[in-house]
Image 1 (cartoon, rainbow, N blue to C red):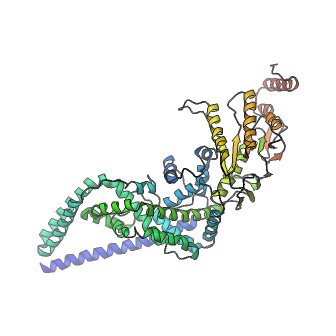
Image 2: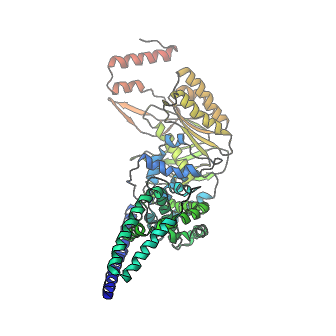
Image 3: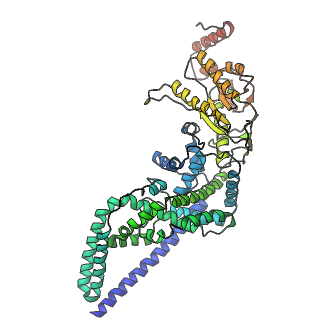
Length: 565
């Protein structure tokens, strides 16, 4: 009977080492696969598709950490400029902490010199030091992305969490150890008892796991964060040492959690971690309840060190965000770093600026120390020009990256009022929504940092007479109070009323042989062509409609009153 015990032990040891071998080789294989993805996708346009829930989860970190006294790109401007699309183009991150920090940076422009230079040094360092960058990216790839919740939501889920006694889980562990001990005394009985105890433990494990599973997943995500942060501090480079120093300081009070967190496994929310070793550990947890035993201790520690964990999250996210920018820059046809100054005198210069989401963008240049009125027909390029200019400022003040050959101007607060619509649920008309949108920009004029605003078809939601009267006074108010406004309009009258305060520029089109073409090039002065009626003919309207419309328009221009033919 004694020999049988040694046989069972030998078989168990053989199985253990075999599984360990497969676990280690699986880890190496996972590393090779991650490194392949890192090298393949660096400098390439991301092909990832996002759901609305994913985008909402990504913005949660920004929502929960923003400080009210700071300036942010507000939701109206963010949506006007399709910043979600720009974020997706710039997001080359493998982890949640990286992409959430990248999102936060885009919504939080830098309004003073210094910080942008620090970011630029990191971006250039990562682009020029492949070994260091790839070593860091491997850690972010292993950390992975959370699915349903942001990591900061996991951190905050432990605030004031009521804890239950872990005594009965300790009892299950004692039963298991007793069953194992019985094997050495009465092997067959011991094995039978062990199987029964394992079955009971697994049953109780799953019957109670659901009650703490959300927190179990939270702890698992934190485990990857801490483990990855420790690995990140091991990547040697003088340029990273200031960040490593901060990380090590923040890790001190939570480093002791790493051993305990090992018992939590990979969780079910991460896409980046998990291997054969963790699968083995999952079965071990089922029969021992090790994760339940550690749960209370870990919850207390995490709740008491939330600030340190948040600091770890921010630093790790920031480093990956800078790697993402270095990759994003390689996807651009060309870019520049902005020349921004801290001044209240607003002047702006852009050379060969383009919109980064267009496949074949037409570059435009301008230099102005006054607000600008942009005229021209629909689809001629006015709105794209406004967005191009705004995006150059936003990305320049956040990622130190402009979609231009040169950009110079002041540190500024960017607002827009462009892609508005009726608020059906709120019962507000388009005009009321537009008035509210512009009012928020007027309210911002009295801050220390100058405002640069982008307005498309100002007050279009009302009649012509009141629109011109009101919009001319609003635009003059902007100019009188030091704002740099870029306003697109069809109302040529505004270019005359405001020519002392606003610089005029326009886009135009050509209509020849029933075809319309656009150059998309910004030109000086107000638009002189009137092609809206000609476009009716191009689009196949009846000649009678076109002819009478032209006669009615000419009669108004000559007599100053409207009268149908």
